Structures are given as structure tokens and as C-alpha cells.
Image 1 (tube, one colour):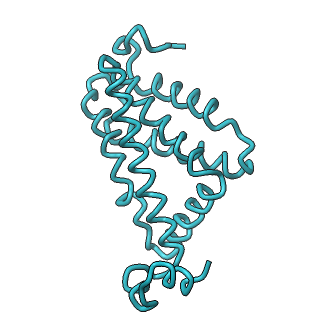
Image 2 (cartoon, one colour):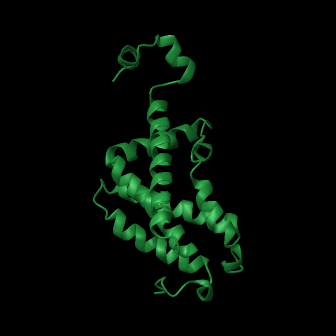
Amino acid sequence: VTVDEICKHAKVAKGSFYVHYPAKDYIIRESYYARMGAFLQSGYADFENNNPNAAFVEKILAFLTLELDYAIHAGFELTCRAFAMNLSACINKDSDHFQKRHFTKTLFHEIDENKDCLYPQWTSQSAFSYLESLIRGIEATWCFSNGNYPIAIEGRFFLHQALLKIFREETLPASFDKK
């Protein structure tokens, strides 16, 4: 798709396009973040409504699993493109990756609200960064494997294991598998 085609379909002048976007790739990035944010907020609200007594680690696992679910929902090709565009923006020091991921405030809040349950070597920020890095790594592995990686199964397992490393076992509810 060309910028001309986008402008024609949107019924805007080409100059207007470039006022808002330096290149068409930015539309994909914007769309990916916006849709991901809506997907996560909606899915997390549904989880909380359907599981009002969920323990904090179950909430964190549900939120992180939704990030993997979104990658599957968006599809392999779009997820790979979003990764590539985000990494390309880093080369020019034009990355706004963390600013665009407003939804991660929910994750940080859940961790920070339960910081007393963290093992002593973890802070809210380090636990948050670890989990966010793990999610990116799982998604990158899916991309590098041409979509032939069991992202939902392996991802949930790795996330579960990470939560066991971050939060003290005695603070985890009986409902959370400690294996």
C-alpha cells in the first residue's frame, strides 16, 4: 500500500498525512499499540469481573498471558512487522516504545501493590522490567521461529516460572501452582 492510496482512501491530502506520520510504517505501529491496549484493557476487565477473588499473581499471570494472546490475535506477520518497526526506530533513537505501551501501567500497579511479597532482591521496577523483557523475548522467539513456536503454552509456562522466582512462595495463594 502506498501513502497515496492511504490518503485517497482516508480522503486527506498527502501533506496532511506527513504532518501526523513521518512514514506509513508509523500507522502500523500506532495501530498495533492502540489495538493491543484496547485488547488488554478489555480482556483484563473481563478477567477481573469473572474472577473477583483472584490472587495478585493470578491477575499478573492473566495480564501477561493477554499480551501473548494479543500477538496471536494480531497474527504472526503483523506482530513481526511491529517488532521490526520498533527496533528500526531504536536505530534512529526515535523509539517511543515505552511511551506507547500505556497498558503496562496496569502490570506495574499489580506488582507495586504487592511489593511486600517480592523476594528481597527484587524491586517493583526490576520485577516489572524482568516480566516485560520476558514477554518481548517470548514474542521474538515466536517471530524468529516463523510462527512455529507454541507461544501460548510455552509462554504461560515461562511466565508462571518467572512469577515463582519473583514472589516469595509463602505469599502465594494455595490456588497458584508452586511447581
